[in-house]
Image 1 (spheres, rainbow, N blue to C red):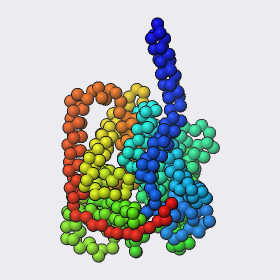
Image 2 (spheres, one colour):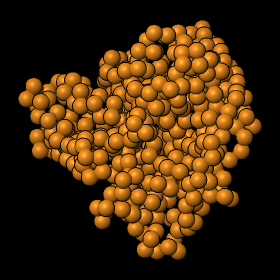
Image 3 (spheres, rainbow, N blue to C red):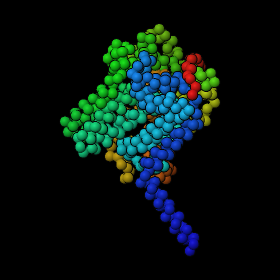
Image 4 (spheres, rainbow, N blue to C red):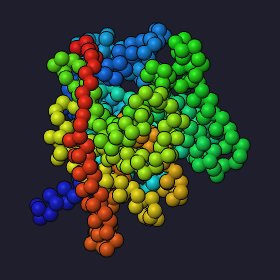
Length: 488
C-alpha cells in the first residue's frame, strides 16, 4: 500500500510539473536559454575586444552625444549596445557583465521565444519546452563567439526575426491601429537589421515586397497598400540618423551605410577577393592584443584570376556579373567550395586561437548537424503538414520564406567567406531539427525512401568533409593587423 501511495504521489507531482512546463514553457525556456547563453559567454570569458567587436563597443559611447565619428559604419547596433556600455563605464568594477547580461537576455528572447513561434507559424511543427531549447543550445555550442562578442551577425538576424514575427502578428490583428503599429515597428526593425549589417539590404527589399504580396495577400487592396506604406515609413524614420551621418561625413543623403575600400565599395571588393580566397578566418592573439586575417587561397581561383589579368581591375558589381556569366561553370565550382567552407564551423569562438587543420572532429560534427537539419528542412517544405502542425502555409510560400531568411547568405557566397556569415542558414537548419523532427519519422527510418535519403546524406557529408579539409590545407597567408583595445 505504501509503495502504491508513493507511486501515486510521484505520478501526481510529475503531472503537476508537466502541466507547469506546458503552460509556462515560454517563460521557462527564456530563463533556461538566458542561463545557456551566459554560460557560453563565461566559457570564453573574453577579457578584451578586438577587430570589429572593439569598434562596435568603442563606438557605442558616441551615440547619445550625437558626435558620430566618421568610422561609424551604422548607428543602430552601437545604439543597442549603448545601455550596456553606459553601465560598464559607470560601474567599471562590473567589467563586461552588463554586456553579457544584455546579450543573454536578448538572444534567449529571440531564439527561445520569437524564433520558435515564427518557425512553427511558417513551416509547421511543434514547439515544446525541450524543443525550444535546442536552437539556443546548438548556437551556444557551435557559435559561442557570436553570443560573447559584440559582433553584428546575430543582432542583425535577431532584428529580422522580430520584424517578420511582428508582420505576421499584424496580419492577425483585428483593429487597424494595432495592425499598423506592428507594421511600423517591423519597418523600424527591418531597417535596423540592414543598418547593423549592410548585407541585409536584400532582406529589407524582399520584406517590402512581401508585405503586400505574401503577408497581407488575403487582405483588401487598400489594407495591403496601407501596410506597405507604413512599413516603408517605419524604415524611413529609422534611416534618418544614418542619412544625417552620411550628409555630415560623405556629403550625400544616402539612407544606407557607406563602406568603401579606396574608391571601390566594400561589397564589390569582397566579390573580387572571393575569386581567389575560399575561406577567411580571424586569428586572435590575446597576449599581444592583436587580431590577424588568415586567408585560405583557392588554387583554381588563383589560376583563373591570373589568366584573366584581374589584379589591377577595379572591382564593380557589373564587372563581376559580366565575368560570372561568361564563365558559369568556373564560378559554380567556386561557389560550391565557398558554400562548404561557410558551413564548416570549426573555429569555435569566431576567432581562431589554434591551427584549423587540427579541428577535424569539430568540423565533422558541425557539418553532420547542418546537413541533418538541411535534409529535414527540405523534406518539410515538400511534405504535407502533420495533423498537429500549426502552419497552413503553402509550399511556394514556405520556399519564399526560406529564400528570404537566407538572402544574406546567398548574397555573400561569392565573396570572402567567414563561417559567421552563414548563421541565418545554420539557425534555420537548427530550427528544422528542433521543431520538424518527430517520432514517426524515427520509427520509419528503415523504409526504402529514408534509406535512400540516408545514403545521400552520407555521400554529401563525406564529400563536404573532404572538400573543407582540402581547403584548410591549401596555401594561406596571414596578414597582421594592429587592433589593440583597452583591457577591462
